[in-house]
Length: 132
Image 1: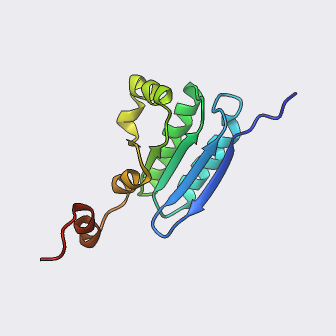
Image 2: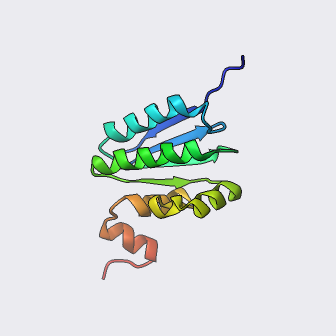
């Protein structure tokens, strides 16, 4: 039998945690991933951004994992956002309503805006304005 796994790379930054997933997310690979993601979301004091650019396929069990991760993060007082979805996965998430529960962003910067409280300086820099 073939070894079925999803690779997960976790990068911890000062203000958030970036999780990069690689592989197909389905009922077989989801068992370990669910535990890893919910433990990560519950064990950090920062928001979590999940990069799914390395995920070519995911089924309904993957959606349940992401919702469980979001609930765990919210119970700890922070949030999660998704980036890097393929157009097909994004469409499925939109049709099933998952995008109503989880912010789906196109860039890492956009995800940071979704999950991080920005300082006045960061807002001014993003708007291209200097201090008065």
